Length: 410
Image 1 (cartoon, rainbow, N blue to C red):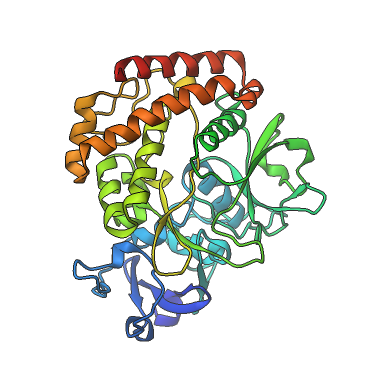
Image 2 (tube, rainbow, N blue to C red):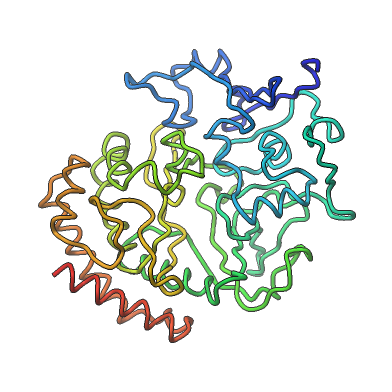
């Protein structure tokens, strides 16, 4: 196969090309920075995973078999959302190179990926003989959002209505549809996000929207009723620009498959201490304790992110994906190890001491944040009017869990 048939993707950060992903023989993929980016002393940050111990840029490269390198793989959705978008495009879900080529115009953060050499649908999309094609009469959606839940990029109209663009590109809001498995997930997330906001945790603008009022929702998304959750994107600017971001799977150079096991919450705290400062660490601890209190067992590496408002230095991104999972999965555990434990029903002093020691934090100040967060959350929950949108059984399960965690803490 000749080089022009292999295909390559140009990678742009803030609209400037910084490198290229090349598809090599044997279904291998290689990313390399452009020399101009390497030599730019004021270059914008792509990812902390490319930062050397001395603070320089890691430029050594190696090919990855079948998949694109971890940073770029994490720009693509997972699970049902990936399967849905891949089916519309006629691409196997595991063919990440070609998914990037199709979805690369609207990726998370300030990344844009575009084909620079021929990528043949007939010859290259299905090298292993799969003759699947896009559904007849259904056009691909050219956007990518992280996660497994079915969601779409949407535009908020001046009237307040939400519209999903025909090609999926350009939305500054995310519409998260109801779960086919669990009742009331959008309402659950709405209430947990508002509870977080009430104790000072930064969260984006959110609103519940009847599914029937969303314009442009693809017919093949399935028959859905009830409420969807609309979340304003913090990686998009009001004027149409983009803010770069990366999640902590990208920070650690891990594939999404390893989002639960390869690191701990102390690992995240260590990165924040080194790169974003003491205030970011305190904010992280507050959010972590809050997640335990609400019974959120899904705070894995991809549910924590960094933003780069100035293009170079990271800050802890606003909170997202706050769902009380114990309301549906009573035996749930934490997504990562917290002070050597994954228990979601308790916070102990010894646990916090181990966490602080591992993260090189002062125990006394860390404990003060834990104490304050527990107290604030319990008080805020009692006063939160938004919780009335949840089913009574879900509210009761959350309240019971909060009291159990609080009693273990005391």
